Length: 364
Image 1 (cartoon, rainbow, N blue to C red):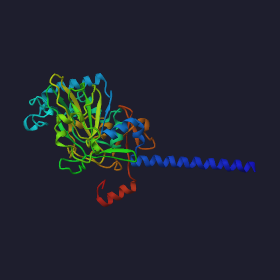
Image 2 (cartoon, one colour):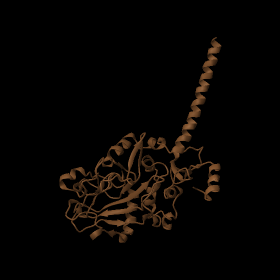
Image 3 (cartoon, helix red, strand yellow):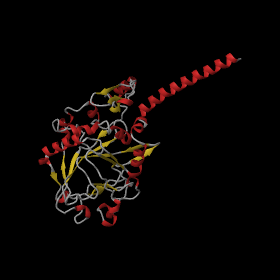
């Protein structure tokens, strides 16, 4: 009887281990297929996920080193003659409001950084697939995220105007803005458009710069005009984070945000602004029919994957994984430039052949 009991126990343990193995294999396949939250949520903190959810923005400290920021500023200086100032009808604020600064000095914009020759472009290209930033991109956009807008360097000299509040889940007419969304399902966060601003200069308290209405990504009403234009009675609701060079601010464009006017005696503020979207969503259209050739030239495989046009991951889309989280049973390989890997998810050969027979193209 004792031997029979021992045999039964051993057999039960064997069955349990087999079922656990089968479940683990199935779960791994399922998470890979659905792009679930396992890798992303393992890579950013619980506090960061919570704060982004309740406030609609997040500050990530010390992403870039002082040397990296210095190199970026040298590149901007070399292209300073290309800066374009917003004047007249192009100004971003209403005349006479607290956001309009001295009423004369406009914000200056600079683009083209991704197409500059190396090493001038290196810093800006690194933002596309930086190992420190990819976990946040995955957490808020999912694997297969893509660059949506062409990036800009924004500068504010002393006295320069800010930018009236914009963005938010409700448009100017009071209708839902389905182009700018934020949602959470089963603790998975998603936004249709994520802004990522890399700080190239310090931003002290009260000096002017990026501001946000905390929690406005969950608003049910449009932003009142008084807040849009920085009415002094409501300025306390416009939060301006203090920032250091190398910090990164990211926010869902569903959060109402803008910029406070730059203090008259403050040094120039510089920030490099990127916008990213989930794999199958597009807001801007520079990707069509193709990104400019100078942007694509010389990109790493990881960086190039972020410039794919919008389409679903399951259609052979290249997407990034942190190397430590790579499932080596999948078709993945390490990126030599960092702890990243580029993978592709594909449908069965039979389905792909059927589509080819039906549509006469590689993809439906």
